Amino acid sequence: CTFCFQLSLQPANKQQKMVKYVVIGAGWLGVRAVRAIEVKSPSAEIVVLEIGSKDYVDVNIANPRLAVDPDFVDVVYQPLSKAWSRAKLMNAKEIKKVTGGEVVFIDTDGVEQTLEAGGVIVATGSVQSSPLMKDSHGKSKEERKEQFTAFREAVKNSKAGVLVVGGGTTGVELIAEVATDFPDVKCTLINKPELLLRGSTKRLAMHKIAMKQLTKLRVKVVTGDYIEDLKTDYVGEPKTFTTKKGLEIDADVVVVCVGGHPNVPFPAAGALCADTKGLSIDAAMLCETLGPDPSKPVWAVGDCTMYGGRGMFADPQIAALSASILHFEKTGSTKAGPMKYKHKSGEQLPSLISLGRRGGAITMPFPNAMLGKALKAKDLGVAYMYNKEFKIKV
Image (cartoon, rainbow, N blue to C red; front, side, top):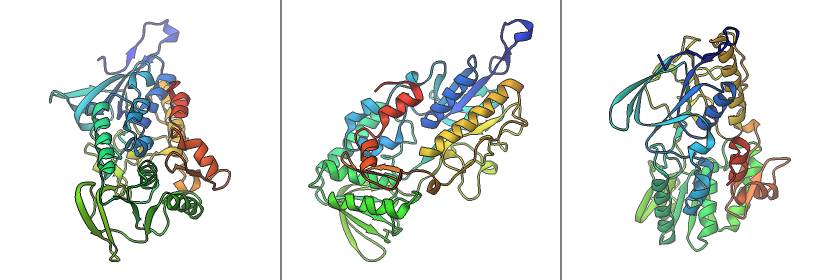
């Protein structure tokens, strides 16, 4: 079976098992997983399944900038073919089943197909309330550019103002981008906790730095309050939204940057963490509930897992995955393999945000605006990341 283990034509003492891997999800972590396989298994056949028609590297941290600068898409969305050397992309409508040794999916023609796999890696990311800030349907590059262009036009023509719900990293960065590019548009940010940037290390200090810059951009920041039942984006006629404390906010453009959760787009109830609803994994990034046979493992990385996988989480997860894959390549099993991943909460890792093209904040070596601006404000670090991970110059 071409989808299972094969033996290459090499001398008897140099026989090498060629393993077919299936990677589900072509986001940042999925592409990095492909690169890990290509390094640890130079001859392995790799198939990447991606829902929708996406054929580019999706750098989600750039979405707040793309929302006001749609032409930046041509820099940020690089072809997947540039990021890997041997993997084959297959677009799908639906993932039906994932088990050790098998992935069942519906292809773009509506036909059910089965891939037999020596190893499966799930990297399906997260689902967010805002389809602008997180595409979970695999839109093409052109479709995403149209989506960002429509948002920019709505902001440009806004009469009542822009309201961003949620003061995490995405919400703070988005409202700063809007306020920077459209200084005459009324901008409001509402955040249920008293402090912005939940999950940030040295949160109070980062909150103060962000507040100072948002105030300079004339953003009205409302903390310790929320709007009940506002769960979806809105663009249309001016509306008045009333907060739980009775504050009235007028807006005709609303982006909801709260309510994200792991994206596990196939039946996996027994494999999910009860608290986070992400895939339960061990320190080798193995999801043993989906793949109990160590000779047919299922790994998971990134936001689809119980831990999440953004930013600083990505490097240690890929390192643990790589070590496990190498052991699997050598022994044909993940049994007694290395357990490299040691999870740290976001509060234990450095934080870096941009605040439009002229601002930013970082926690290293201490909370400050200057270094944050230098590292991220200009191009969000996109050129650095592409060159570091994939040797792509943008």
